[in-house]
Image 1 (cartoon, rainbow, N blue to C red):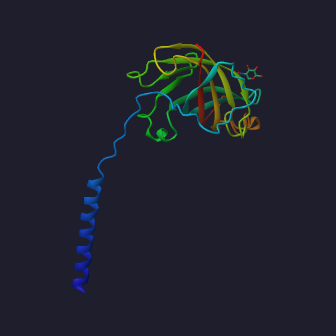
Image 2 (cartoon, rainbow, N blue to C red):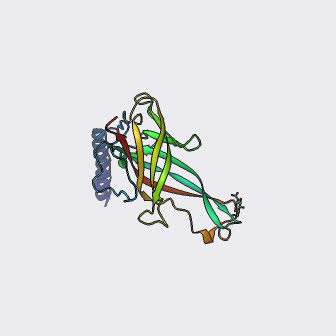
Image 3 (cartoon, rainbow, N blue to C red):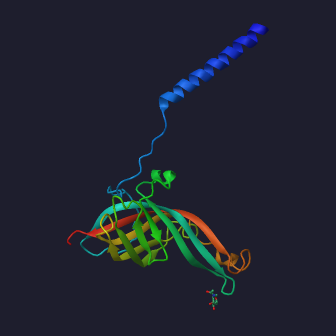
Length: 209
Ligand SMILES: *[C@@H]1O[C@H](CO)[C@@H](O)[C@H](O)[C@H]1NC(C)=O
């Protein structure tokens, strides 16, 4: 009986020792933050609504992946949700989202003219501000943010955004407001509803300039 217990203890001690040795071989996980903005490989099969007409000479430059929040305010009088604001951060790949905040390459300043600004000013100082000129229903319009086609009004600094002319937001997941029937009933007047979402953004520049 005693030897059996002893054997079990020895086995446990050995297992812990082995576990420690294997862990020290693996070493700490080192994450290398990005040093440039954009994934320059065209995302094969990406959906672009047919009413988004990109003027001649403008071509794909790079993709960013968005993760953020959209907030809606309930107007109890009209029984409608209005878009309050966007909070968005941009990444070079979907995988990088899990390493936030170290992995973000740009962020949105919604209150300063919809300005996208580099988050890595050591390597890229560019910004752009945009206005959306067309939209199209997303795959699931009751659940997902609609597709948007936007024109760039202004750029500053030096880097990836400097020569961007148009951008397209597509393939959003989530981010829609609740149904209007719920504003003024389930949600009181002035209620701010927050919905997290992700999306793909395609950036175009003019090849001929
Ligand atoms: C709410 O809706 C009503 C009716 O459409 C409108 O008169 C009012 O200005 C709206 N309130 C806000 C804060 O937008």
